[in-house]
Length: 259
Image 1 (tube, helix red, strand yellow):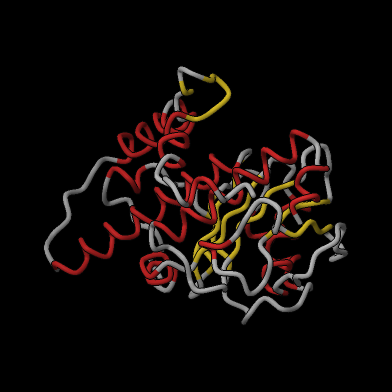
Image 2 (tube, rainbow, N blue to C red):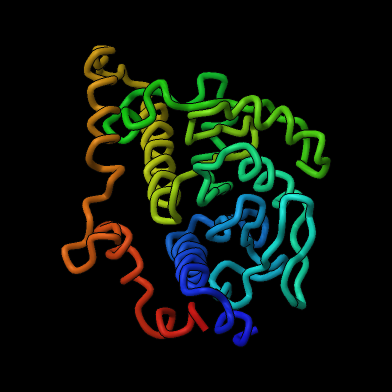
C-alpha cells in the first residue's frame, strides 16, 4: 500500500494527502456517520478516475495510500485489499462524470444536515453562514439508498451545471469544489449554517428578516473572498483556512495520514 503511494505522481500524492486529511478532519470534528459517507477526489490529469475511501475503514484511519482508485465505470484501477461502497460509487461517480469542476466531492450525514434536508423549507437564509448559500442550493428528492446507477441521471439533472451544493432530501448534504480544501470548507460552512438554522427554529422566536439585496450581496462577498480562502502567505497555492484546519491533525495523527 505504501509503495502505491510512493509510485504515484507528485500531483496525485498531494491529492491523496489532502483527501486523507479531509477524512481525518471529518472524524475529528464529529461529522462522520461510522463508515457510511464519502469524500472523493479526481485523480489529477484524468476525467474519469477518482479516489475514494476504502469501505469498512473508519474515517480516522484513512490514509493516503489506502484510498481506492476507481473509474466512473466502477473498475478498481490499482491494487487494494479493499472494496468500495456501492452507494458511494453511485453518488460520487455521477458528480465526477457530469462536472469537470468537481475536483473533490464531499457527502456527509451530519445530524444538522440530515435534519435540514428533511425539512420542506430546506436551507433557510437566517444567518451569515447561510447567506453564503443564498439561491445557490440545488435539491434532489429521495429515491432510496443510492444502489442503482440509474439514479445518476436524476442526480446529475438536479445538481445542474453550476451549483456546488446539493441537498439530498431526507438524506444529507453534498458539496463540490475544485480542490479538497474548497469542497471541505464549503461543507463545513454548510453544516454550521444548518446547526444555526436548527438552533434558531428551536427557540420558536421571530427571526430578523434580512433584505434580499443584502443576502445576495453577502453571497457574492463569500464568492469573492471567503471561498478563495486567502492564500497562506508561506505558500500562495495553499488555502490559509485549510492549512489551519490540517494543523489540527497534530501528532500522532499528522505523522500518519500520509503513510
